[in-house]
Image (cartoon, rainbow over all chains, first blue to last red; front, side, top):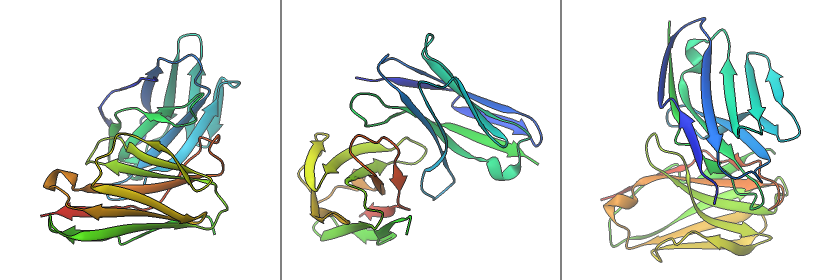
Length: 111
Length: 113
C-alpha cells in the first residue's frame, strides 16, 4: 500500500517568514495530493490540492509543488500570519481513491 | 448545503453504555467515511460506505458498528468501549467512491470512562 512521509513534525517561524512542509510518497500510481489544515479542536479542512498532471498550483499565499519523478510534493506558505498556526496534513491517493495521510506538521507562527 | 454535520459534538460514556454517533450530509455524495483521530495524529480510516454499502472495514473491533440507513445518513453504534477508544471521531463524505476529495464534519469528541 501507499506510504506517506511528512517532514518536519514541528515548524516554528516568525510572522512574515515563509514555511515549507515536505512529503514523499511510495506508490507511483498515486495521482491526487491534498493538503489539510486542522486548527485545534476543529475539522481537517482542505486548503489546496494538486493532481499528477500538474507540477505546481498556487492560491494566494499558499502553493503546492509536485515532483512525480522523485515522488515528493511540498506545501509553501508565504508571508505567514499567526492564524496560519495549525497542524497540516499531506495525503496521497491513487487507485484505491482512499487518501493515505502523512503524520502531520505542527506549524507555529510567532507574532 | 455544503456541510457534513455530526452529532453529538461531545459524548462521555461508561464502558458498559451503548451510544451512537450520527453524521448527515445533503450534498448528494455517494461515499461516506468514519475516521478516528487521536490528538496531533492523522485521521485513521475505520469504515467506508459506497452507495450505502459497506465497502471497507479496516479491521475495526466489533464494539464499533457502522450503519448507513440512506444515502444522507451514517451512524456509528458504540458498545462496550474501552478508555483507549477515547478520540475524535470524524465523518467525511466524497462525491463518489472514486473521488478522493473528502469533506469532513466537525467531529464527535468521545471520552470513555
